[in-house]
Image (cartoon, rainbow, N blue to C red; front, side):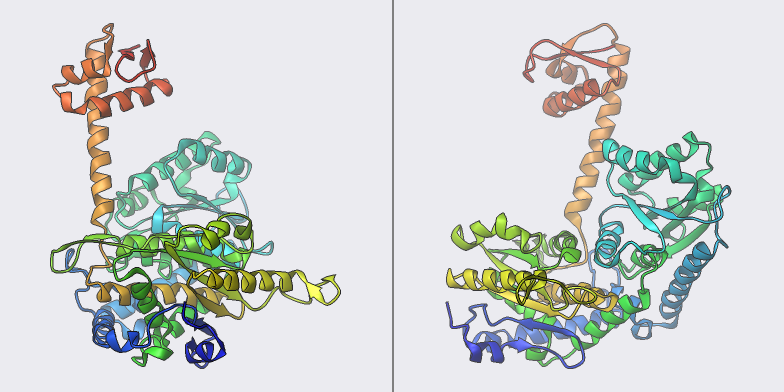
Length: 527
């Protein structure tokens, strides 16, 4: 591996003046001519980013603008209509949060709301969850809980815990289209839980959704407390600075202006075409170098701070949904992507760091170092040594040990975990994703694979309905999965039908299973 001596550290340490974030790429083993060889590609990346911010159709598949950068600086939006809707929505978020805190928006049977139940999935939950973990504490204005899946048992755990205080719990339902089934299911389960204890769900509910969406229509018809808009030009994985993330954060009492200011500062810094002083450009170039521009190695995120534990999960969606694409912009099959995983240090020095140090070298690491240990002074656990000193020592030790074994890494350093810092970190990776997408010539702003999964699920549920109706019409007949497939004239669906029957039988849905447990011999009937 190339030298990581003091001179290299000085040469490749990027700390833009006044930003409060630094990036060290000195322990990435790129060749001396790498930046020169990538100059033309990087110039195009800068131009593409400038066009995107200016309102170009940056998502050609869906003929959409991509405007998440306008959310933290409405002045750069391409027209007055967008500038106004961004600013007015932010004011609505602040007003709703203030009214909830003061009791101007209150539940029917209590003085004020004390809890928030956020119902969403993917980008409509991951961002708010990450920000809650990063900035939350015992003195938050409201306690926040999440329904972020369509798992009945998982919803039971949350709703049963909230049952005694549902009367003081505000439900925030988030879905841009209003057609996301997981969110719809969570809303219906929550509504049933409220009604079971004699509460009107509508009197406890706020919708964050697209204007005119199915959810918007339901909220209007049922008289929900408020409806807050989402924008067509902001995708779920980049929606944290929209009402999706800002309303939960404001309800928790966080400084949302600080979050937005941090993101805007990172955006401004990373418009700089002087690449050595642009941390997002450097990060994108390191991704390109480390993976040969083809996703050949994984990205491991290791924050040495408990508050940033969920960041790797947040980045999984942002990076993998954005970059994991079958085709490039020219229609060529390329199967691009960048796999992301991680947790936190020093915990993972007792887990998968062993493999990182001594196992297969199919990854590169991004460490996140937070300089400030805690608010106030720390006790000494040994003479002259605090717990924070140990954490810093383990970070440095792991970084050195990996380098000694030929494992590459870069390090992001921030002063603290504050609203401004969290805003900067999210924006840094958003910008890096945008730059990298240009470097590998893909559309970072659509998700055809996700849509394909939704279509397949819808087809399966349609098959389930046909299967149940056929079994009801043939009550008393016992057949194997293959037999029921033949009844449906769907012999090619025998596997799917077996799995449907097994699930229905396990959940007491009017189907009984008997005979051997093997898929070929198990027998099913309508009970």
